Image (cartoon, rainbow, N blue to C red; front, side, top):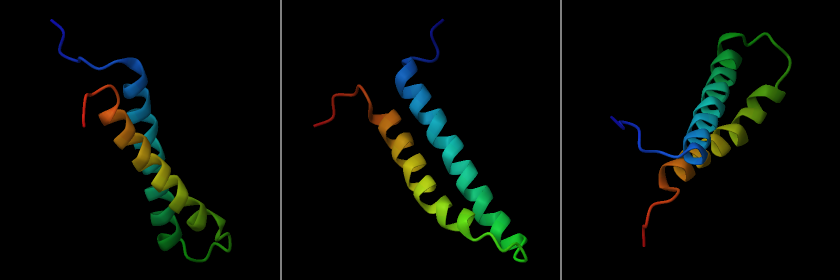
Length: 68
């Protein structure tokens, strides 16, 4: 029974993207919850991380499909 018909490269891309999205959301929520922390770097670093994670998820879902 072959339930999961996805190759490793798209699966790894989706998994890495979901992890980056989770880290980014965690950084953003952590910044707003703990506003006394003076390290604003994590808030600014989470935006590109969120974009990269979203891109990896989109790439992983569309990789190997014949979409014109």
